[in-house]
Length: 162
Image 1 (cartoon, rainbow, N blue to C red):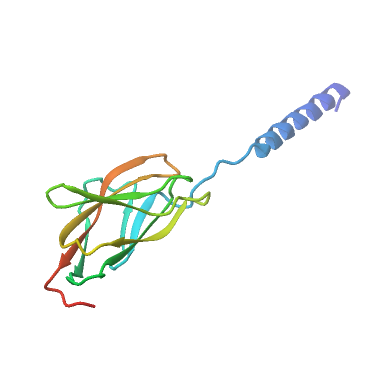
Image 2 (image 1 turned 90 degrees about the horizontal axis):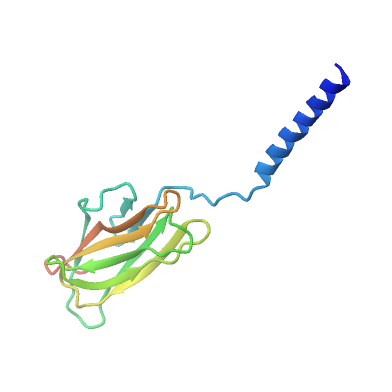
């Protein structure tokens, strides 16, 4: 191989190596392990909704006993995964006539895209049906999901207490 060709080959090797190492030296974008989704883990059954699910899908029904006693309430455990870091999934609670009741929240998503479960207490003023609509920002797609039907809690006085 001539010196000129050898020099060109070395320059190409250096350039290719420099480009490859330059790309590798770029900071990696944080990627979530899963698509964005929110969940209810307690009380059962578990209820999951993914960013690709329709916003107006049929929510999961959770039937629980209604116990009209003082200092009795229901604890919900809600969280999310594949959530944009630094954002917090929320659920707006509505009555069937679309009257807003309150907002509950999971924990803020960390750099691992997980919004750890958070217990939310519902007071004893809850009797009847309540619709929980989730809002969250997906980490991979950047999709902003707003008002997604997630679950309905039916506080039913005909169900015996736990």
